[in-house]
Length: 208
Ligand SMILES: [Zn+2]
Image (cartoon, rainbow, N blue to C red; front, side, top):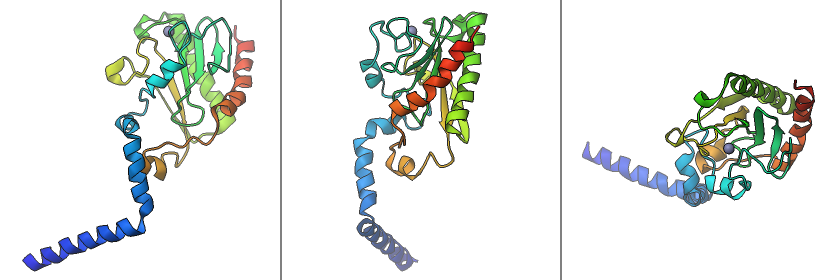
């Protein structure tokens, strides 16, 4: 028995040595993983507080990402796709996948319980409309739609509620994501914005 265990251990060591030799890319990925350690910490939460320090860098003078300066109904600089008196839609600057949208009430509130009935209705109507647009423009295979309330639940910007709409494709959680813990976003965010904006302008024109 003892010798069999000995063979098994040495075989395992040999296998590890061989793996190390034949897969330098695995070592490279391991280094990348170390480099992206801060990302790793939040990978298990889908709607993780995506790099809040970067988000803060792009925060408008109002102090809130969901309240871009001025009264534009859209603005590429802020990735603002839609704004009226009830609802705001932003393209997430640090998306989980292409077309990751953030839908928020226009009013600065930290919990859905603070919304009045009209705001609540328009918020969910916009979630529906935005999902329709994403289906039309990107033809995803599915969606994750949800919100995190307050920091313990993973809210990156806890004081202004927002609903994430994340289009999903078969295989988007791919090898690179799982092994390297790096997400690949195939399209530049400016292009994504340009594709979505006409659709949201269409909604703006048809809103009561
Ligand atoms: Zn706000």
